[in-house]
Image (cartoon, rainbow over all chains, first blue to last red; front, side, top):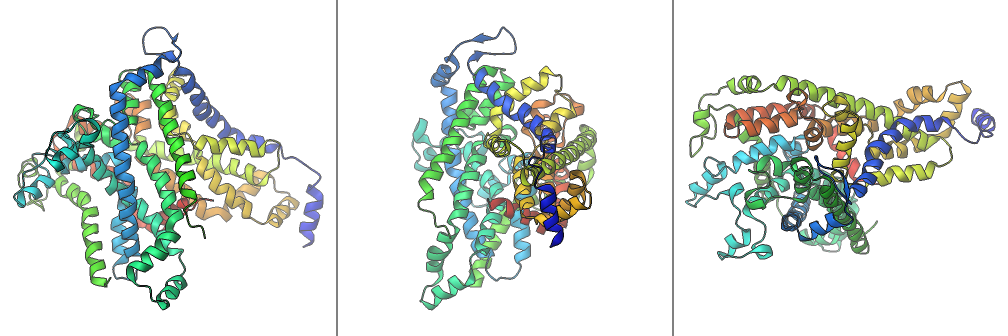
Length: 321
Length: 269
């Protein structure tokens, strides 16, 4: 290895490669202008009364105070809460089960995988259009299936009733009514859409489990579900944890289905208005840019604390190899 | 659990997953009259392909396709340029402030997109970039996660290789071009696939930074069409079909590669 020896002695005296700054420049310019500066600007703007017309006015915390008393903001917050609570656990549980089955030695694996993974590359706009058609109250396929079994069809995306009202057949209001049926439609679609990605990640996790673990457990007399609960789930826990964080963040950022599927966007009586949609509405429909940035700050705080909270709470219980 | 039960569960799941795709394709081949029949026909009585042509006539989907292709190509090239250079700098070069700059990059990754929507719009409109390809491409010209992935990989390349290259008189550009890139093909393909899928499917950003019809991408064009023709589902399903078709074709060709890329993205650190 003479070359490497000479190489080291030749180049070690030169301490710094200043050309590095040149290499970093393109990325740095874009990050500073389109990431760093907007964040500073977002925080600053949230203290201003800023709309498309009229002068800029510093108003201290009035945007945050307005947020505090805005019933539409609370509704969006509650909708988002239900949405995340419904979509994330369901996507993860279903994907673990399917990945577990797909990981076994069965025929037709390639075909199954091709079908299950397909949503990963599909555009949400296109798929929202299709689901809007599936949920159509007059001509949709779901109501056709309901009719086939002699059941009365639902109004799906146009139904602002809470799902608990429908289940318990009583009148409830606010939090106790639960997510609206229209919002549940969005949740059904989201679970369908997320499944492909979650299965890929779970399957990658499952394939890392050494076969000897199962063999050893079988020798000790463990069977079927015991293997699943005592080997698969504990070893898969870092994967589940990863999915929990990323899927929650994705669910919090949901915008497109609200925009494309519900009419008017935000749904019947605002029951499908999610936080990011509300942010969009305030920024680019009503042009309350100052107020919108106060909302954006809250979105940021929620996502950030969620990540931290999940990390702190779950890290102790997770099995690391 | 025996094999039969596993198959039954998987088949039910597969039907559920395939249903929207099947229903989209089926509706796109029906006449408007047949699509409005209730209960609906599962398979169209006579297949009509005119919906595809009709959709192209109603709005300028050709233009939207071209715009999306330009946007995707531009973003892929720009991301390759910025990420390879900065990952190389972070992984193989010594300079003051390297660690703190890298931390700054990673911190920017933590900020959710909605936070910088409004301010970015204001910046772009100040410099009159709204409604241009610049606004569609350049703000997404850096992929921090890709920098992270590449940096990890560049660090694993043996130092002897770089020393030998320097003795042979190669400069940094040449090292990147003739040594680093050829040795990083799988990750570069991964990044390319991510960028293509993300840009082709991106919706909220183009919706905000473009206004005119001639600047619509395929996704904002489809959303616009879905509002204009809100009840003509054969047309809408035809438009949805050709919107997702390019990536579906890509998927059938490089399925293994795509899945591997996603699986790899899940294994952090």
